[in-house]
Length: 150
Image (cartoon, rainbow, N blue to C red; front, top):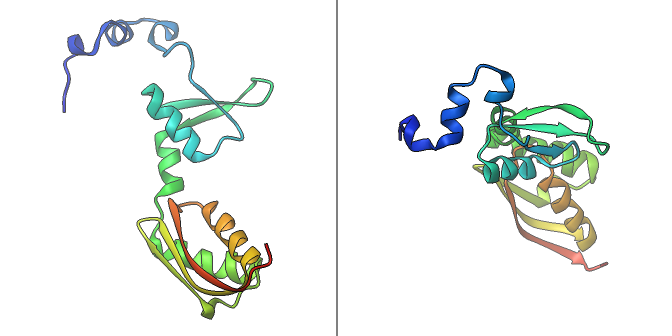
């Protein structure tokens, strides 16, 4: 959908005709803490209608800039690559889970875990670790366990 400049409002018209960086910039600057998740950064971009965020440390010093493209890279991964990482790195290496007992399905970044694990606490830990993997959009828990040790 295309918009004419006159339909965008006075701020965009002012920015489009600016001669200095100050006249062209979005003010106030939209920032995100350096420790923010990619999801939080994406939400902040959407809320403020910006394509870039200034990343700041706890003391408000500039750390860098994150763009929409940077955030997309974190979410756009092949489902097969995500599934492989979950089986090999998270379940097998980190949690020492026998992967034959756990089925990992990934469709458009949504992970479905089913099958059996020995302890409920280990299943809950697996869910938390998997949710943090780059490219994972959501985790559907269909796991069962032998012992409820929570």
